[in-house]
Image (tube, rainbow, N blue to C red):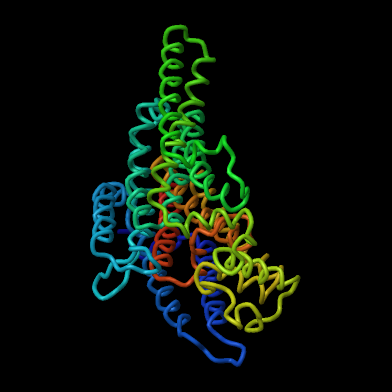
Length: 439
């Protein structure tokens, strides 16, 4: 561990922006719990202050521990977190219909938050070790299970929003490590196909109303298996044609057939895992008015709150949607809506500026890192922060499905706060390593 006398290596601008985001979070968590008559329903803001303080301690600790220690213990940390995910599935506490929480020393922790960090840590070590050989398909394929295993364990809880974070982080890190774009795009397109094909049956039922013969492939298992078998034949013939003739046309046929086959098979499995309310989130994303009093309520109320803020907002503690408790999970998933209603465009601009600065500094640190491990570590952590920001804000303003991802540092929650703090601490660590190497 580095000495505390080397504090000059810390990027204090990142630290100050993080503290500013934490402060904003405490203020609007407090506001979200105050009613129209001034009654404070819950003391969540006090708990958030405590979690923020612990988060700062974790952040500083993560910035001081040598990167070599993180690299050497990456496998141990990953295995330990995966074991926690398994224990959560077996003995975890059920909250909101999902088994996501586990009690440790009297505290309720969400291991999936820390699984993101452990996955990034092991991916950074593995990708750095492979170096330029990551361009080989065999090497690329060997790294996928690192992200896939915790993703599947989280998906079974079920927690679709958190599970969906692992693959984009993996793709960003693999791309930064030098993986071929064709390999990254194949798996990215396959992932999108899985989601798209999975929601086709409910979309057909609730939006199209009348069944379409072509879409029967996605709702009837017998037809699904027939199409999968056909795609397997096409894939086999295309691969055979490519290896015999070396004509790229056959390669592209195999590429497309592989995406369709993976997407259709994955969608069939995903529909067996997801709960009806999770699938409905994607349907109401396309049209919230399908179920305005149910699944669409969240989006409708959130968009209403954001729109009501106008340019300068209604004023702190003056938001109507939040004060009347119309917003669902307004201190967690939809804390951005509370902020937007009370501070308006100007307040949102401040929040965006803080987050964009944090993300920009993370990318700069990744680009200037001393070695590939530090660069990939900073890339992964910055991507994680960016995903939470864009997805949370996106679902609050109705341009993305409601997935339950918190807005790091602002949403109420201890596990999310600590995971985000450690992520920023590791970015600070990579920066400090470079500064130390230059001095």
